[in-house]
Length: 397
View 1 (spheres, rainbow, N blue to C red):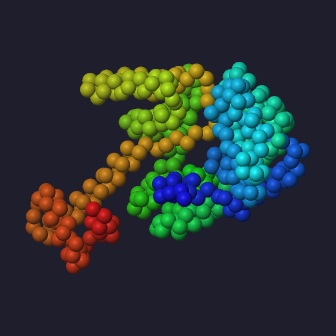
View 2 (cartoon, rainbow, N blue to C red; view 1 turned 60 degrees about the vertical axis):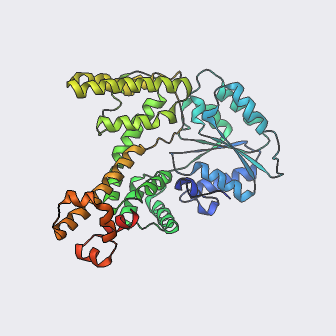
View 3 (cartoon, rainbow, N blue to C red; view 1 turned 90 degrees about the vertical axis):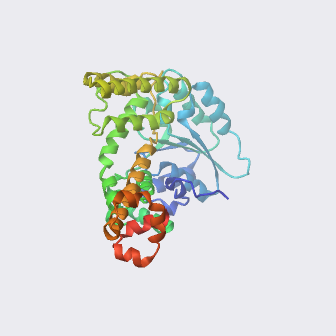
């Protein structure tokens, strides 16, 4: 049995039955009809914004049919030969387990970025020969490069899920995880997710470890984070060094030091091999300029700093990238923030103890290991009027 302890909540709570698909009744009906009428059409394309359940719907319908599902991510296919080598045999060979089979080609947007390599044409040819139904997912199927694919496949739109449905999901997850979060906070997460269930679950998982005040502050930062994600998508997936790329961070309202952490955290997500080495070199050079600005107050160097973090890192790619990529929030920011929160609680406890015991706060901080034992007594805690967060901190230390 798989250990679910360290599995992200967005994967842990992925739906497995069609009855659990929220807010996508029309898409559910259409994919059922497609499978019943196969091979009238060989493929169905589920398209819509990230996090609305495109991949989950494919897995749910396969589970309900008792069919094997073979998932292939289009962004891993680099040319015509690769697609023919991987998808070709999969589309003709029967399941090893004697079940039916559904082929899932996820994030087909990734193929469209492979310029002049014949990848999309090869995929279109394979649709005609496939002995099994093919489910394709895409964020934007209306790109002109997909005109032939739209003719050959049933096209089904999936829209963002209403915040009320997301709120129900979050409440169920909280109950399952024994996670106590106020209704206002859950509602705020659901609304600001803008129809993206995956984003809402990711927020809840990270923020559930914080106190209520911090939760509301973090949820309120979603607009700022969205601007960061949009900028990272432009840098990591685009190649054109145009005016838009040169001003890519103009709408990102955060300190340059935090921006460095966002770029550093996601370099290995976006790049591999030689591209990753080149991108790290650009990042290190930007850090050189950052150091000079701090030491010498030469703020004119900031233009080079932002150029290297944007256009410099974007230019290491040989071609544009497509598809959806889950960029990560910097783990170091969260760790620093949590450490600061713990330090603040420790200091507030020491301040209360120092006032009653007539000792210095510095002395109480120094003898905190002994102070922990003293504060294990409930009467002492009550006398110091320790808050719930402070008591929780003492119990966890």
